[in-house]
Length: 484
Image (cartoon, rainbow, N blue to C red):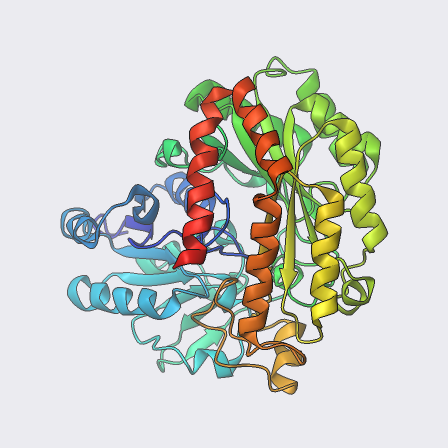
């Protein structure tokens, strides 16, 4: 084993903020109404695995640090990594590859890119990309791949064909696929993200600006939503960590890193009521009860009021729902497995329990009419969420939505380079994209500029003055995004 072939740099590049650690959303933070950057857990997991194997690791989230290209250049010159890994997004991929090409030409490291786009990708999509500088593409779960890739590439150990869900450059220069659509089951065997290498102060709870860690509690989703990549990438069978393993990570975050706020990352945190009950009971009976708080994503089905009550008792300060649409016809077309009645019921339970909730909605699907979108607006006003985000449908490669949009000739351009606020669609069968964008603006402004909503939030600021500045910041941010 060569002693000078053991340095690895894991990073998000300098530039605008994106949720690069997400598989399905990779949100553009700049144009979101009130979104905060989440922790770089994909890098953290990768670092933990590599440290366990004895590699020297540097982790940098240049974009969230506000660092520059000069900072990245300095790290490359000083650290001289033998292997680098960058997390890619659908929106930034062309710029990301240009940057990696320049790094490869100057320093010659093994180049690994990780992203949802590379999960068993279509040949058509790969042919659009200049991948000359790339040696490996991770389409699946980074913590089950990066350590083995480093062993093969730097130490000549192991067999790359045994690594799940990657593409690697073969001896003839062409990319070879390993096995896709198989997943590792033992999530408890994974080390916790290497938070000692992460700048945890960068990732904050939006209302209080306190550090907030991301805790991955499960992977996979049994749903079949036509617009989502999660069941493709993580599988339709939900794989859970044991509640005690999650509790151990919470305890480490609190005792070692001083973090008391958490985002429980799961495609559907409440999908298994028995698991949620065991997890919340552990938290309630632990020394951390009353000292920590968390937020989580949920589905409106399955869901019970009792589950929401238990989550609140355990320390949940907000729950987020992907309501998507206020039209039963659209929900059925999207294969969401929910109804408007379920959406309204979940909102009603949150109000009764006293648990704030965030509503996420998507408009501009190929089959949508103006009436469908106005039904979503009506439902939002009935639900009265605490915060909302309205995104535009984005046809990711590999989804049913992409296939439908292509068949209906509604693609204005390739989905690559697009995001939820600058969609690749030309509109719907019935509306232009400009009309969809105007409806999105009308919904957001109509919701956030209601006198009753503003007065309610001002009342919260009187009770908790520390959140006033953040509410003002996000308010101006949202208004600014519509003025541009």
